[in-house]
Length: 315
Image (cartoon, rainbow, N blue to C red; front, side, top):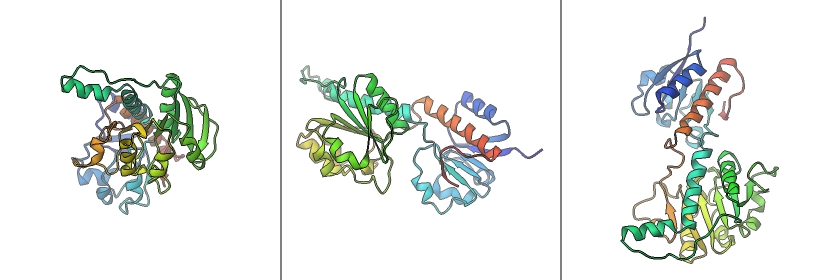
């Protein structure tokens, strides 16, 4: 009988999640540690690591066959020279759709209903009327990035009565939640038709800086911008300018450029900007870890059987 597959798990799993992981891969032996406390010996012995081991420690992983990230993003790992050429790299794409889409939708709706301003009034002990609010029902929503997260967002917005158009790199039929699907080449003409532009695009050479002054000028006056993808999509000064001129009604941002946002950065005080510190995609919602466990179980099985890995980024 072959030796069990040695798996090091760096995630803060509950007892139930650990039990489900172990029952889903009975051919494996599991060791649990935190990102900070994993020893060089544990890292060196692991054939599979589940979790984002610091890229600076990848050279310690001399037995590694699979690095199963807990993030959808993987840029730092592709760029690392420490990852063994024998090791496959897989992302956790598909784990964050519910968490990120719910977070961004709540941020957007709170801006539409003036809730951040009323919160300010509450803290100042002011009983006042902030004027008209906006509804997402009947609104035209443009979703940049129609993958897992964008698809979740589209279904939520559609359920509230929005008319949702997606944008992908290549032409495709619209999936659930989308009424139509465009391409990035069509983006300039689509921006002016939307009451809300919500981006869930990854960071690539083709997306960095796309949301620039021309992008915001092309948006409909009074529209809202939301970003739950990557901060480097945005020219931050151009966004601030659009908010200060009143061209945009508001911006819901869980990611920023730069990140972390310095304490003295003007984006903090831009009118109708609602900023959260890149927390929508963390482990705050328990289902995220449930989803990562499912992905890990699937890929441990594929590795054991020698079949195609899910979310394979690099072999």
